[in-house]
Length: 544
Image (tube, rainbow, N blue to C red; front, side):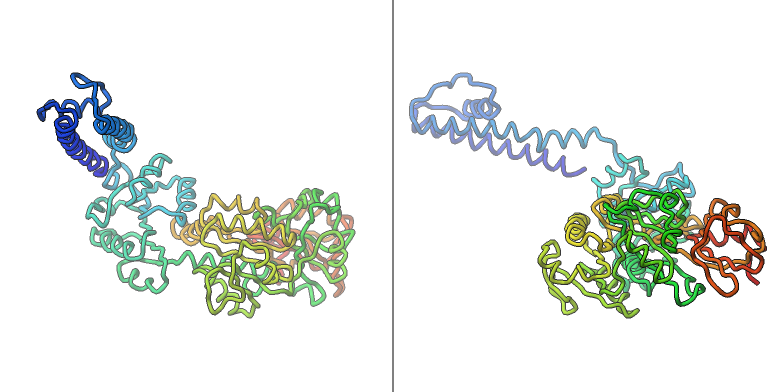
């Protein structure tokens, strides 16, 4: 609020000085160049008329060329000053006078709210989740323009500066929880102030530097999280099966059965068709258990599920079955290295996690570092080709800005159409854009924070970074003497029957008319809570 007034005072002083200087100069010029005497007040009148472009009174004609040049210069100068005053001084001053004042204290009319110190990408998804749950949020923001932007979006905002001593936490005891998402040292100050005010509720802090975790805990925080490191963990889990297998429990099917990831090329004969139309299990013996489409994980493929062009599918089967499926889709190379592009905080932690489980990792970044395999511009196709993208198992983008990520995805997808692309994203609203550009998986720091704090604030996790598919066995008891078509297992609980063990042999090529017999063992797979739902509906199928 001070800046418009400062500009107004500076303008006033500038005009006074300018009028006096121009008036005195005019007096001197009239005396020596025009041989006419003008007193100060007449000269001041002329200066004000000229600078404001309102016209002339007594003096409207001059003879000396220097005087004419001076008068013309003052006229143009006055015109420029007049045109500049409106946008630079007057409009901001009027805006400051008439725009609504931002509140500087916590609201008295809201109880049981979550107080968030400082707005940023890390908390945007969390605030959206809170709104869905009808949990009020109050944002404590020190940046005035950002505070007004948040208020215009309909959020409850308090504007106060910690540095200038304006921050008061009167009423903080009515909060449900406090989330500190500012700079680490500011977080510690706000946490200390809240505890001194008598706040006994939970306080969660988001830190940039993990070594600050203990000092912030000592300041009074209940838990401290590093979203950057959690983001790296989410990306590592998606990239490496050694960290998080795509499908668990497959070993129950025996050593002959494998998991494969395949790309559905846009021109493939299976693209755009449903599983029921294709009958892939009957044609190949392999079972599609999940697919990634535009960053969305579909872990419950039904007969009506369409294999989308460009999607990644996950399939189970023996070597021969997967080979037959590979004739219809493009198998992905699972033997090459993982390529990490970007070596900031997220990239460094990501590489550390991948190498700790024995993954072979190649690193590309612009800024020199002893760990880099290639140092260069990641947006240069020649540099990308030099690191061996065509032989990579997957590429993981760990840039610090979303525009670079978006452009890089476009370049890489054009160079290597079937290469899985995993991307870190700063702002949640850019996740869909990155998917549209060609990324198979994108994870934002906002999603990570919502996952970290969702369970703490709401008693559940709102975002599953990557749901897993699980294979499990079950007794045939509730389905004995029924055909597979009549069991309707998928429709009832979302699980897919992938194999039947009979007489010690495991059969993957299942016909809808196949009749189940006593003693059979069923192997099913599903994502999320599918196993729990199955045994809840069919408790007699639980293995002894």
